[in-house]
Length: 209
Image (cartoon, rainbow, N blue to C red; front, side, top):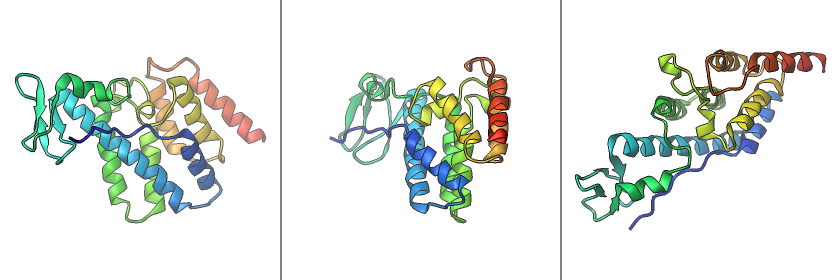
């Protein structure tokens, strides 16, 4: 019987290396693909975990068929794979894979990544957009950064990391997405106070360096 496998959150160091190279004008196609496909795998796992969690439909790890949960609480595929909903949930519990409000962003990233025919610039925009999204952003009820679901680390660590990506690699690096992130941060009860002040301080430090 197939084993359920969920993609891990993506390494901050890999993402940092990508942004550092990008700020220097270096288009590292191998690195952007490594980061992008890792995020792609994570987004795919996120969508599948949420579908099982919210809709009661799991993907069979043996044949890939959609497998609805039965009345007695089991996922039972025609190919022979069978697992209780409780045991299925245990495979993704605590792995930051639940959050239906983030599913549209995961779906958008997969679509954007697959459509990135122009290569590097489109891939970078897809990655940058995903990193700067928030839970419930589309409803106007912003909560925590979706990056927590895709990048390794605790919430406070990831907040600092996003600031580093925005202000560490050039005066105008990814400014549009960061402004969107800050606007959402102002509405988010999950974030500590003073994110705007911290952004201003980092800008001043950047300008004086």
